[in-house]
Length: 287
Length: 282
Image 1 (tube, rainbow over the protein chains, first blue to last red):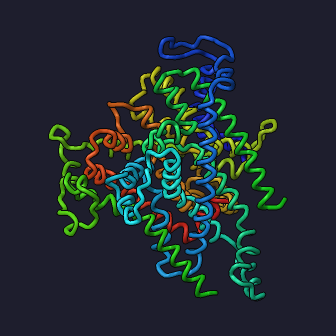
Image 2 (cartoon, rainbow over the protein chains, first blue to last red):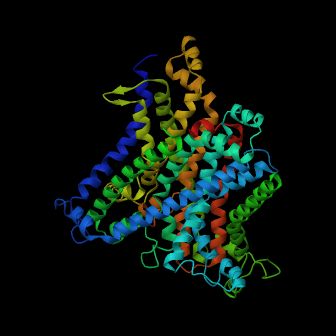
Image 3 (cartoon, rainbow over the protein chains, first blue to last red):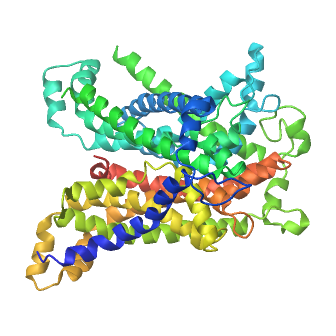
């Protein structure tokens, strides 16, 4: 094929993306070396001061980071288990197969913040239906104002919202599996459980890794749900890294410091996701 | 054993169905309530627990001056931004994806896979990292609080998705069809437009659906980069939530805003069942 044409195909997209992104990324790095805040807006140079402050004098950032890790890992594990179970159930013929497939996809099509607004009324401590039904058992959990329970409320909402995405990826994977291994298993008379452990699951391993990584990437950005559901509260008990950076940067206008946090956060994200991808590949593919 | 398995299966499906449907049902009944039936204790069934009325829905079409909730303008803003950004992302993304699928690139150690990875890896970027420079950048060129500024930002969000789905899709379209077209005397652009694209419609639709989903559901950038001139739907509804919070109009507006994308669920399911998604996922 002709060689010069290929650049006409590739470059528009590539250059638009680089063009839009190159400035913000360089700017974040430069901004992180400045003391830009609301009293002193400007790109002065203060060296690594922001980073020193971040690594020695800001436990709140690291707490929010560990909270984020906890929330995203827990939700992704739950989403994977539930999503796989659901996909496996509507994979083969069941009654109303297409109805359930559509229904299980629906939450992912709804805007997270808007559904979170509904969830807030749903979990309302005196006027919401959840506590009304639980009052039969004489309990009234403080879904939004108890530091421990609020985390689980965030998890419930995230699982509701994003399990469909996991379900979609895994069902698409299941539908693309070759038929021969299943025939062989059927001829050997394998029980459903053994068939799952020895045939379905190993065949799904590469797709599972992809799906988990994609979801981890998206889950690590949790922020809108938290903002609407609890605003990071009570106290800082549901605050995630993004939300903390948002408060520092765009509420308190400590732009320089927020930039140093977001750059650090980005680097940590890239490193940890790479490690997780490597580990998952090793465990699930047994390479 | 088998009976137990089937029982558990349907049990689980029913439980999950209830969980999925519950917030929608709650929003639907709440949208017909009035002050008394929201604040006087929890009510569920219309006509039995409370007397339904249309107040929550009526305010949606009233003008703001008469105490209505103006969601029509944000609605069209959202629609416009999502569709424009999706269209641009699909066009640019498809071109790049075609190049990455058909030709080999090599610049030093950078090869095809690295370029593809560069596109897709933009999804790793947390929105907050981009939002601060975008905020300062757009305000310096007077595009803060404008639709154009948002579209530019959304292209970054959506193009990786388009490239990701289309590269895999083009890899499944046999190379022979372009080669035949080239032998028949088409130039590469004609071959792409007249032969490859018509054969890629399922892929384009799937990519388009995903772009529209991820554009429509974004809140964060719209929230940070716009204030009063331009408002997108999610921002508007969250703003409603933090003010007086009349639950009935809140529920009604939430239902109206999530409704259009439910059609997308049907389309995605259709292509899923036909097996058109499988290539895109791996």
